[in-house]
Image (cartoon, rainbow, N blue to C red):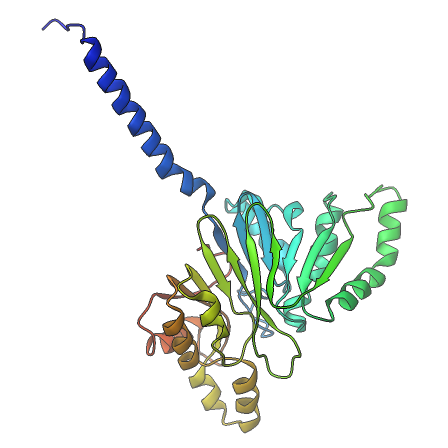
Length: 312
């Protein structure tokens, strides 16, 4: 059968239809390219579990990286995430950090973030936001490594003189940071006898993410989330705690952390699209997944166990 030339009117209709289809495809594909990722760099606690590095979460959006906490192993976990396909987490891109509180398990990786990427030729200083006392901590870190800085800058390495610098910003509740990609809001949470502990909310073009940090019972996380896309919350195993038969441990955990029932109550108020449990404390043969099952007994929403290098 001979193929006839299409009338001009038909050609215009086809061209218009193709243009609409092409625009629709771009609209569908664009969010995938710019989607904010929540990368679990470390989900652990002071318990020395090899599968769980110290607490650290990366919010990746618009090509930029925003770290929340800097537990032990943070830089190598970032490198591992980069090798798994999240190119933004090349270690030279680690230069903006938000600290929830100054407990050692959340800050032992700060020297790593400050110095290791600099040794690997990061030229930009690190901007670090967190509670009162952060300035003194950062100053002491730089003082502790002053001989290393001297050798690397004045010796044969010819290291740059900017990439090891760290600028500490001691914050109060409210909007504490904003750039072209993200707005970060800090809110207070109770954490035992700490004078300041923060949770954070990240708002990007396509997602809202709330992290509790370490917290005792509170409604502050729920209020900050209020229907957010992703809510990350710490939790301890109630079953494991009761099995210890230790009034002292119970008193500590009830003041410093939250039980599965308390997390469930807060998440029920918050109504997040996804609840991710991290920084889970458990004992003996209990696993992190067992703690998640404890939460599920009280919570009807979607909840998962956050594990190192998982992405949400």
